[in-house]
Length: 163
Image (cartoon, rainbow, N blue to C red; front, side, top):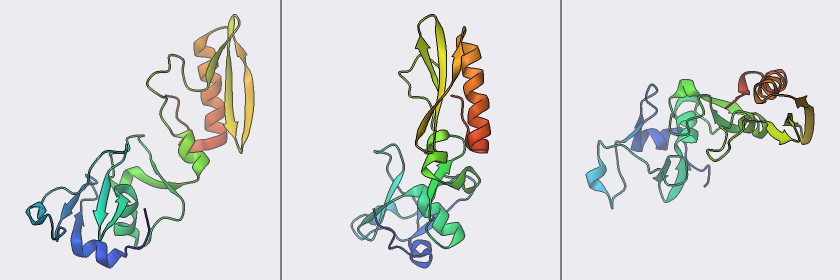
């Protein structure tokens, strides 16, 4: 995906609803004239993608461009963790580490984020600035999860996510 689109070109072809995060076609591609007035994008990669002038863009990056006039210099984080919620109030620039700190726990995991089974207890650990930090070992899952969350909030502030 390239960042070659301008705000003016984007506004020529799409309307953006800041509250819903949806893009609507004003001037759809020539090969899809029936898309006029319909929602733009597809959700095949875990994010909404929109093709404009032969290039695919992530909708959250287009939302940033639409509102602020330039592509973001950093990652765009979805504050609520929902990659399909592209309302501008839900989007914020973030470093890769901040974006990962706000990532949801994978669905197949049984233990809370940052918690591992360790013998008769549970170890809490977190990654920060490329280093794995052992927070401590606790007798219960809840204690380890609480320790992880406290450290995540200390290290990542508003980007910390427990689940």
